[in-house]
Length: 181
Image (cartoon, rainbow, N blue to C red; front, side, top):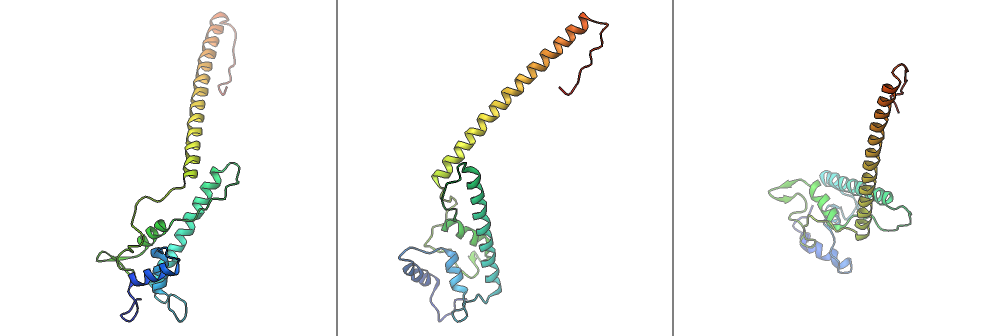
């Protein structure tokens, strides 16, 4: 935990941003750094270790799911686009995993100001185009299936009328009709 002799969370966030070539770091790397013992390199706090493990697991699960979605959408399977989660999304996962006390995130304080909170995660435009193409293809296939179903129903009615006409014309004949057709 951050003690009185160590630096404040905002100061540490600024220091980490400088180490990251001026780019702000997300709450998750900050959380890990705050709770990592400088001597051992381990997270000693049980709750912090659980939070880190949970967020790591959730991040891996979401990235795997995104990778699978991308694989399902890529018909030619040549796409090399990243499925890494955005810093904002990882911050959201962290926020959902950390217990809250008096409106603050336990072990992190207020949400980092370096990354603005947002409910909208940036979306890859190529992935969105692929989804739109898939949606259009699904719509077309549904229309085609509906047309085929209407044609089958019309054929069934026509067949029933023909059978009724045959039965009227040849009342002494036994027409065995397979009901499955």
